[in-house]
Image: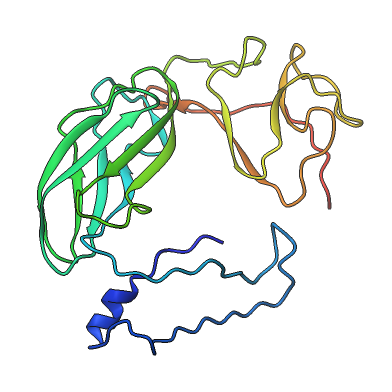
Length: 250
């Protein structure tokens, strides 16, 4: 279980207290089932606790744009980040940067962030994401006197899907994934020739998407197969038709 860093020093300061030799912290937990099941059980474990005073701590909280599942991105896609200043004073000339995959860093500076304030910053330099596919986008805030670096970086994987606007659209997957992709929890989706006990072969040709090409889907699976994006504005009556074979639990 991942938890957010608790800003102990700020909480104590707000209550007129400070860290001392007699300071104590108590954690508790409650769960209805054992924690040995990695997917479905309750409870949590706390370990390796460190208390320290954070100085000029800036947090890179998220990448707000582009979206992780995007359509028709261009060579001038805005990159937007969310940063939080945990310090009790305003911080000025805050350096931030981002990069796409293993490319060069794009570096800019935020003039000021007020104390205990959150800012949404859009880089002036746009990202080139015009080619459909999967990208890794990494954003960093690196203030020189920030003594806690574990919350300075956010990395996200995003998919830029092409926009389909010519119809009829027919996909048999004989030439590859054609920009369909999978995601979700414990996914077993795979593209190939189905060869399971009850599902063998494809409806058209030899290739199909299946959860486990030679067997079953995974226990506690919550997975998805994503299509490209579709512009339906030119259609008078849109219709979706597909071939499916199912062998699922009751």
